[in-house]
Image (cartoon, rainbow, N blue to C red; front, side, top):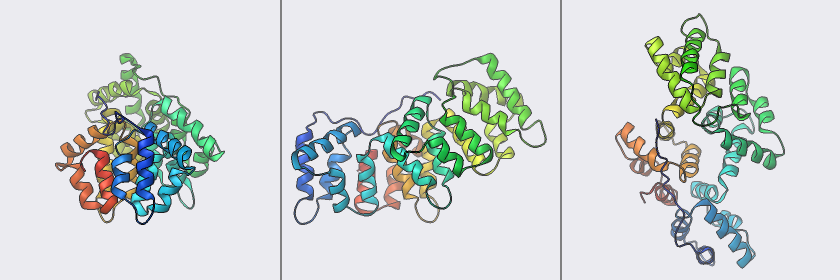
Length: 319
């Protein structure tokens, strides 16, 4: 699916970092905090503009804006605002680190962040991760994952994917056959073949491969993956397939799952809304409504409350 990414947050124009810094200082100074003023300013500026406000705040008041926000806010609302204040690549690195810290590993978060990125985005993440944690991302991943799943993630983070737009129809037919022979046509599954093709092909190439696969097998590659794989390997393969077909639908499904069932997966909710707000959150919002027949805003309003709810709704343009 070729789509035009449409962000929900765009740079404010006109923009005055000095006025915004003064307004934020006023919102946090003295008794009580004006949370609405914080929401109005920070959800309506681009990340680059927020960094300028942060610099201005330090110059003008000799204070760290993030520290001030942390001392004034709390709970999930604080999580949203602090996420907005971090440069996007640093925020994703922090999320990856958190997914691998402590006991157990949150494979689902690793899949969501790593399996959806282009080579360029991936190389930024790899560099930033090592700068932030003084440890190569590949090494940390290898210590936390295993088997074919580890191999797939390693391929992805080393940036082996062909450049955007690279297509070879002849090769797509061969690759569809290789996938068929590695899965449906044999007893057991040769995951190495799936890894190699799905980690290397450009998204445009993989779309051709999926079409050829359907032609050859009579069923979609998703159906084959459901039969052939389980656990995190299944989740990672499905993430790649869904992102190749429609990134907005992939993220819409993730948002829905974060809000369905008992309790809300707030971390995923915040991460997707913040990290996609300047990329394609309006497309995700449209897909959510198309797939689930309800608006994203109404779903969020039923799962969240207070300033947390207001901040998320402001980011998706439905305050």
